[in-house]
Image 1 (cartoon, rainbow, N blue to C red):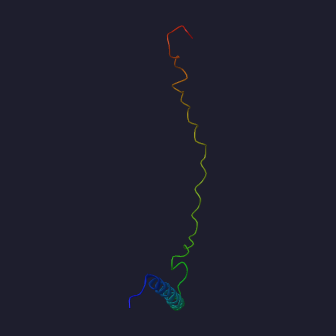
Image 2: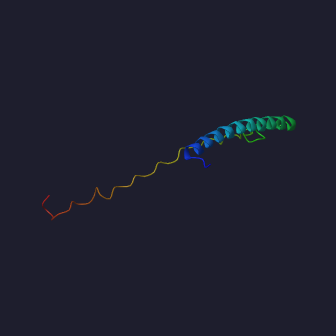
Image 3: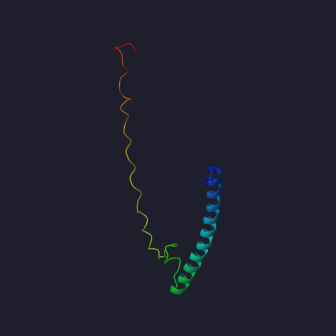
Length: 90
């Protein structure tokens, strides 16, 4: 006999639940295996790339001896133009 749509959806849900259980168990085994290998090889967080290696800081560059000269302000090209319109009617 053929399964109905509803029966197939129920079966899918059951399979999803089973798959999640199997996944959780496999993840536990993988984590345990990884921990064993880390211990065996004596790996650190730095070796695994989880933390950057501490490098001695280089000497800071000396502060500049004199402040940089201030930039000259440019005049606006609009402030010195005459207003538009015929001359003398301002």
